[in-house]
Length: 291
Image 1 (cartoon, rainbow, N blue to C red):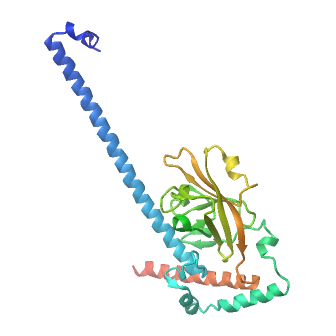
Image 2 (image 1 turned 180 degrees about the vertical axis):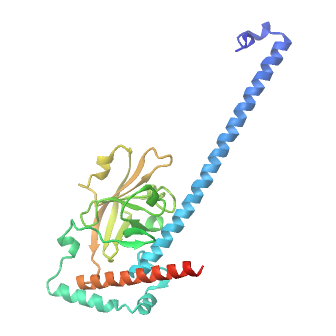
Image 3 (image 1 turned 30 degrees about the vertical axis):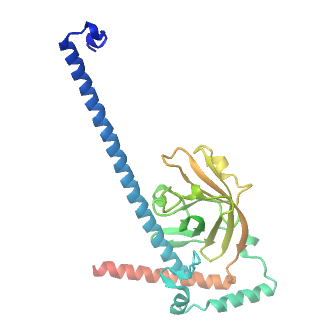
């Protein structure tokens, strides 16, 4: 550093003052450029995050509709299966749902009251394959207007598409679901309040009704606390902006509603799912061949 930077202004000549001013202007220009670069980088990051958010929303919605149509389940209770009115869907697929429900009611009246998952809470959750990914069901959060498919296994690539089952099952009352903080995924769960409802529906149509008990923030190192199943039947979590902490929503189950189908009907549904998957693959292969 030049000595004139350490001298009192009264000791400096006009030439020294000019040199000092020139040096300050250069520093100011550098800092201004760096400031603009940081602002530009922030804008680019925001735009990229927004694009990722949109793509994640599209991917989740597409798989949601495909799952609804494949399973014959109205995941969010809007009267539609995919984009098709539920009654039209059942008619077009030759599904006599009322007959299945009547058979299930008859079985219950004969003494088979407990649902399969109640008799065997350690059972593995059934899955269905959509777009090369295995899904265990849907999570519906009316307070933030989100109905999303839930993948069976969590991974960073999977999180770019839809929420993932982190650990646990709905049957054992210890399921944890994680997702990115995209607005179209779990970005808004931080706004949930005590008493808000959350529903998880498995691929057979068994529904598990929960109520938000608390919304808290956990450190990413608090893995044991996150997985603690003692007090919470369902946990939803996502990263805060910047990823430093985790927004964690704890829920307690209020009710479970078994699908009104017998085991035989569920086996029949599995066969139907397989046929629909094969049809989907055939159409996909036919389209790729013709192109």
